[in-house]
Amino acid sequence: MEAHSRPAGEQGAEIRLHLTWPHTTVHHAVPAVLWLEPLAGTPAVPFISSEHYTLAQKNRMFLPHLLVVPVGAVVQFPNKDPFFHNVFSLFDGKRFDLGLYEAGSSKSVNFSREGVSYIFCNIHPEMSAVVVALSNSLYAVADHNDTFLLTGIPSGDYRLHLWIEGIRLSALDALSRPVHITTGIVDLGELNIPVSSPQEKGHTNKFGQPYAPPSQSPY
Image 1 (cartoon, rainbow, N blue to C red):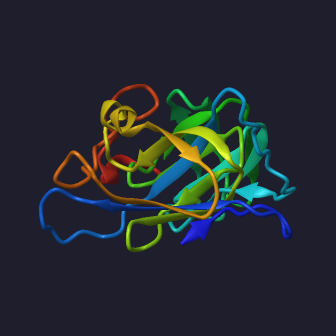
Image 2 (image 1 turned 135 degrees about the vertical axis):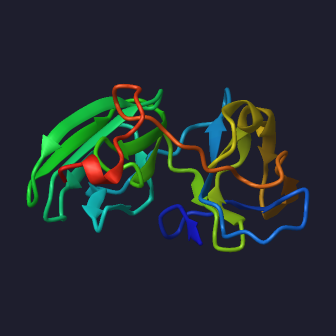
């Protein structure tokens, strides 16, 4: 489980939330992020980390698959494969196209606005990643049991947001809710996702066209 806590010595409440599916199915843990948006009168909690963020390309995969960063963070995209990649995103979080670049080189992107960016390679359709850019540090990533734990939350009023891989944006918006935080543990119980299971959807290349068959790709 990844949980983001306040600096040592600061106190705050704790949120717990578990994701469940409406039907009993065998599925792997789903990449998911929970975050809190402070409402009027509740101060934001900025990121304090000076961490360097990297989304590497290795073995025709993006590593890590899910990356949460503060708004304004610069993410490096090193190519650690012995062949070319072409990284792009055409979604609302951050639209960019890094073009074709060779093994051993690296390019970077400034994630200057809040949102979810779906990252792909224009050469290898099996490659995908997600970058979630947030304006405050009150977030948690679901663990292997589809459970969130977010600690060190200051008292106040917030709107809870969720991103769950494979779930439609309209369904995610419907899961957003206001929450009032005081002290202690706030157990939000179980949240039933309004689909039977997350669906992996195919995607087009950066030109909106189907990918060429593997035998036709020169890389």
